[in-house]
Image (cartoon, rainbow over all chains, first blue to last red; front, side, top):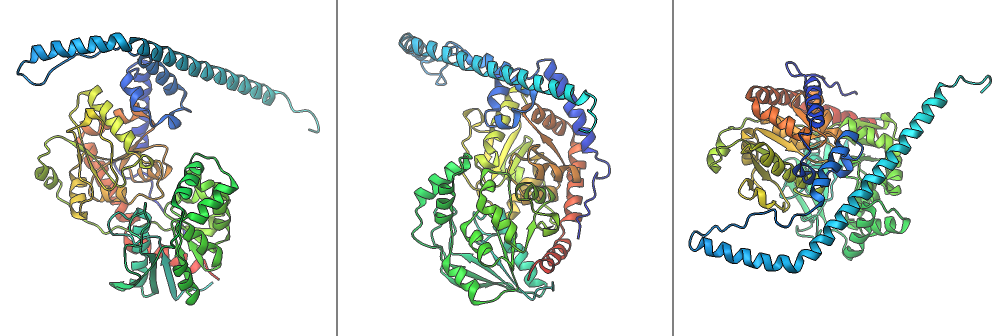
Length: 151
Length: 393
């Protein structure tokens, strides 16, 4: 017995809708809409699935470049308790400045490591991409040659 | 080949109760339907409840539920669980070695008492699944001419172990939950299409009040829902990451409702925006699904997906991973869902769905119609009976 599945339910053409959505995504991607550290961070568990999608992988690496350098001054120091809030903020800022003084070297080294790894990934990506392109060009060239008699 | 008069279904745990998985639920449901159809039927299972400890929590013996006699057998004691987990971890990472395969098989869940019971009575057919258990392998090896494997196969590293190739090839036949699962078995093990049948699982129609859940929980914002095991294999960390990015990038106040087992690590940016209900009754789950804007299924490893069918029956459209062929094909065939490859797709699909109540309603309805047409129980029972008659001595 075969499965007679009715494809393409009436009124909804999801294939056409998905085509339109993908065109919109491709356009937005080209416009840099998704070049965003939040997008790169959101893909942390999806890397094996996006690695074979050239356009998005390039965008992912670009987003990663923005993340690689950690800025230890990029967050505001706040206080939720209203009572003595200004004083508490000054105290926290003082503690943070002290911590920063002693941990700056570590952060700096971590930034260097991040940059090195990212450069390595980009280099490998470029290297294998070029190699694949060369192989594809070679295959095209071989396939376009007229076949020898008797081969 | 003749139609069987007796059939025993075998599952490692009793489905339809507590934390049992979809495969166990499916096997129990098919056994109940076979019994209702008049076949001499039984369900053999183990006394285990928890799929981490496999402790024998239920008493051994027979219990009858409706027309179906259920026989409980103890799981073999003396398993070296640390060795099993070490081997499993290496195999999951794709490091296949004959030693690890042998260790995994030796220490996997099995029941000598259950095997002995199968030897004592000559059932015309033995339907056993899912594939990833020592018990299933042992049955396939000992009774290949009468065994119909119901594998619930996923494209995962374990599926590439050599032991499964021989079991899939040696059993009398296979029952698949979906056409993509059947194609996967053909790719991995060279199983010809004629050796398998696609059956699936039936769903009884239900109606659920879409407003009841939100009112009860004071939810005034639109929400996504995911139901099922919350673990990396099912993609729940991805869903949480995507939702956090979506909320932050679009400024939309959309919530997430989770039901099922497991302990999802809610990121700090989503604290207060995720309602994690854990286990809920079927009625509550259906109301939660009916009230959701979208049912999101982020899993890569599905052979059927009962919850996707339930969400459609509740009239809710779906958003699924494009890489999961089973989920994507259900959406393509039904028109009831969209699919995403990466975050940009997710964001765009979700915006489309959130911005159009009409689109959501239409997709929910067409999904519901698909389930009622393709997965009504009479249709499934017909496919099951045909499969039972087709494979055997």
